[in-house]
Image (cartoon, rainbow, N blue to C red):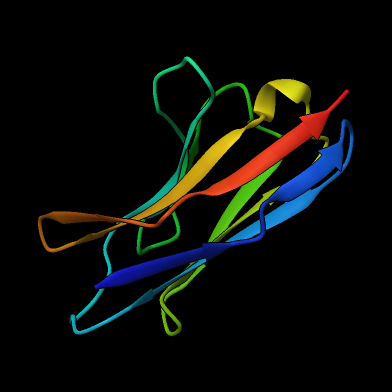
Length: 114
């Protein structure tokens, strides 16, 4: 199983970015999917998650600014990030839970300038 994330970059505060992640390999189905992030000197935190039934959850700091979505047929998960703030600067990692195993993408850097 492999996860390939894309979409990071440099954006000014107030701007938008869209992260995408595709899961490939041999498996029956993907259960939970989501995005974590890790800022310099900070612990990794869960940003948003989505169940196979499209039930979503967000950390309070991104609620109403970020939207997570998934396509079960394509095994993809996306994170639309609007009104970005400098404190959103971090490496973002997608994850997927298959059976009882968690799989991780390689991380994509998001930098928000003030």
